[in-house]
Length: 341
Image 1 (cartoon, rainbow, N blue to C red):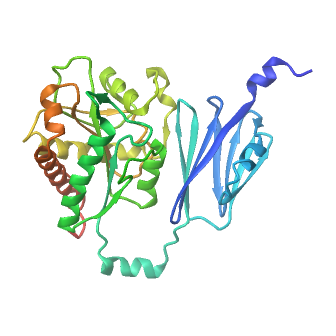
Image 2: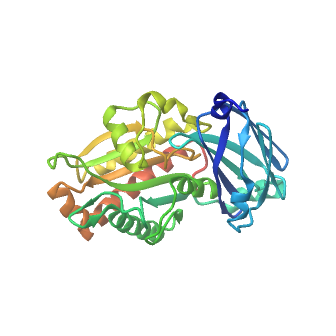
Image 3: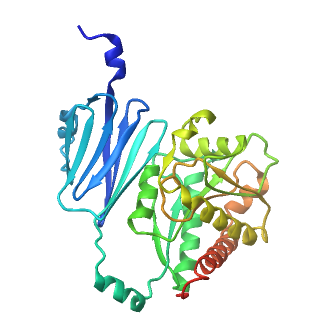
């Protein structure tokens, strides 16, 4: 007879999903509980080795009737993903609540010809705009005004300005009312190897007197207020003591993301109050390998902010200031390189 302790020590694979874009695949492995593991990658195989035995019901995935671009092998405490071809890069990070291991795999192979012609191509920097929420997730709602709609309106306004300037390559995570998982949004950023990632949102607080912009970058150091905002946008309750569960390969990007936030603040303060520039554990920013920020464009339950948020002229003014901040940041980033602006 199996003991209860044995079953408690088992790691159950709750779900495996993936996102594919071009030569990039992001794997998401959701497991039943926090667990220590080791990670290795070689040629066309990625291996995750846990300290406890795995429970994996393969038939659940067969019933999805979806052909995955990899094979899954499970033996004891080891889980191996075998791809059809060799990859060039494989890296991972962890998201808590629910506990997920996110693995990014790139099959893009750089060769001598690519390196030699890169200067001639004079690659335009890539900007990704992310309209928060969408589809079945309306975000914050007040007086029938939905965060997902405001965010998309601002993204479209900003996208028009960027396209007209023609200095940057632009990618939108969504250009219509559709639902995307948070890890899919940052997955798009990594898939296209973007230079800047900006996620636009709208805030809400108990006091209708609070107004203004707020700009956040990813950090495991944060105030109680920043944690509450992150919980709202993540859609889960976070415990301060458990944030150490975030295991990010890209933690070195925190400083450049903070610098981007500061450039945006300098421009946005010309047309409104910027309440704070802070770090917080936002899921949508976790795992991006480029400077990334989340902007709260205003408080939907503040009368003045709400009036501005639905004003096309004000949206355009904000979009112009955000774009100026992004341009200034990229110029700063390129100050030690040959500028291609």
